[in-house]
Length: 79
Image 1 (cartoon, rainbow, N blue to C red):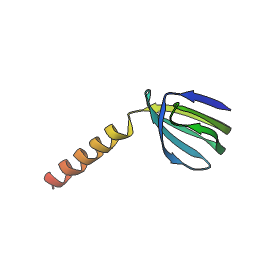
Image 2 (image 1 turned 180 degrees about the vertical axis):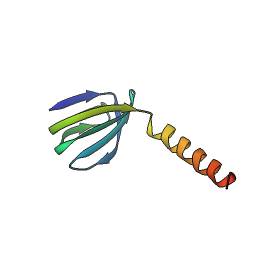
Image 3 (image 1 turned 30 degrees about the vertical axis):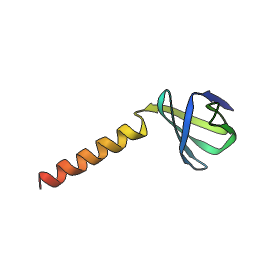
Image 4 (image 1 turned 135 degrees about the vertical axis):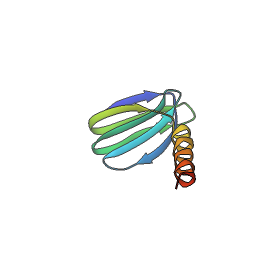
């Protein structure tokens, strides 16, 4: 199992993929049979069980949304 602190939000959850955001930015977890064993957002703690194949830090979800929107707007302007 994996225990994390500083978690603000569970952005996405599926059996094979979990996306979290927190004080560390964004974190993508991939594996199989993933389950959120415990979650306390007030304390910023989450425990994930299952087979974890990869952990990838990424930009925060808000930064991703902003970049995606600006790329989309730019592509419309350049058409």
